Amino acid sequence: MSPRIDEQNQQIRDARKQQLLEAGAKVFGERGYAGTKVSDIVREAQLSHGLIYHYFASKEDIYIELARTAFTTSYETIRQVVENGGSPYERLKELTEGIFAHTAGSGYFFLIALQTNTSKTVPEEAAAISKEYSGQNLQLLEQLFREGQKQGEFIHADPFKQALMYSSMLNGVIFTRLTYSELEDFPQVDQILRIFTHAREEE
Amino acid sequence: MSPRIDEQNQQIRDARKQQLLEAGAKVFGERGYAGTKVSDIVREAQLSHGLIYHYFASKEDIYIELARTAFTTSYETIRQVVENGGSPYERLKELTEGIFAHTAGSGYFFLIALQTNTSKTVPEEAAAISKEYSGQNLQLLEQLFREGQKQGEFIHADPFKQALMYSSMLNGVIFTRLTYSELEDFPQVDQILRIFTHAREEE
DNA sequence: TTTTTGATTGACTAATTAATCAATGAATAT
DNA sequence: ATATTCATTGATTAATTAGTCAATCAAAAA
Image (cartoon, rainbow over all chains, first blue to last red):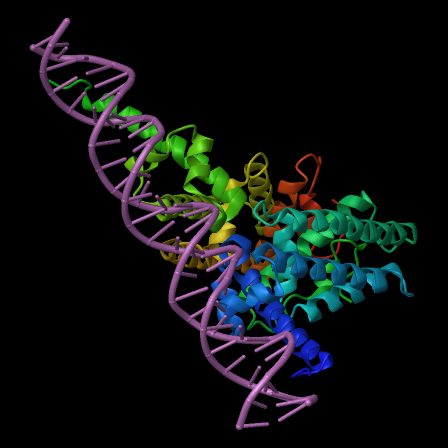
């Protein structure tokens, strides 16, 4: 009776949706929400214009789903490392290296998170998600800095500001690296972390 | 014969153009090129929709003029400080403090320069200007790091990468500060510059 | 082979936004 | 007062882009 069984249809649907999300991540990341046309996404995905509306209600909808993914994964990444064992410095280093490794090839989800955080033109719901998670991420980092200061590994300074400084710096460096992707050994994690630690000549 | 003398007309024209450029800087900075409507600019400037086309050929045109201003002034700022007297560290510190002071209230020109550098949706001519000046700015910084390393003030590392690191970090921090503008004493310039100097406990 | 179901297409419509232009307004010399 | 010139307006047109939908296609059961 059915030309395809449900499971097969589900597989097709999953694959197409994934294809559209990946294409969306790329073009939204590169061109921003307002700068991206629906036609850009479907061209990247090599699908027809109409099909995107079979899987998403609107351009806003696909962006919101991407933003949600970006924030939940970044939060989980940070939480896992921060709640890990090891000294605060070790955890901060592991986190930093992990983030750089993760954004090495394509930082599209990073870019989506960043623009969702900062742009006034993203869908309202995405901005709301961003606000929620950004605060949580900062709290995790703040706690890490607090511990590191208590244990004497980190210099004393307002932990919240240190968390802000850390994420600012990360944003800046990752952003730059997406432009100069051919550079090897950029950035040097140890060098960056010197901002937060006590003086010591080289590692 | 003439209802207004040329000089008067010129004054009016100058004032209006300035008004539109300031409004444009604000909304382009906040919303990006693609996210900005011509109606956003004229609303901000409190002028009629039609008038913007009396002073600029197109939305692209006004953006290009803003981008040019952003890049020429940033280049001049950097050049002046870098070619100043003082040790490399002193000059780097002066530059950094100057940039933070300059972008304290509204960093609209900073934001325009940044997005012109990184977005794929800005007018082609603006992107060309950006490419030219960004390279020049980096060269100035690279030279400063080279000198600082020669004189022993700065740690040894590829001067180009240090210049990139410096500008990345600046971008990240200024960006963050535009969101958290209520923060006092953020960032601490001395703390940032520790990335580039030899170990020493506090200043 | 035929039928059925749901994915897929792309021409079409609707909505948004850039750009135009005929009409108006404000200031000043005559 | 009137005439002149140029800045200014906003309704209108043009161009772009989001979203729709009737028709088509592909795969498998009957």
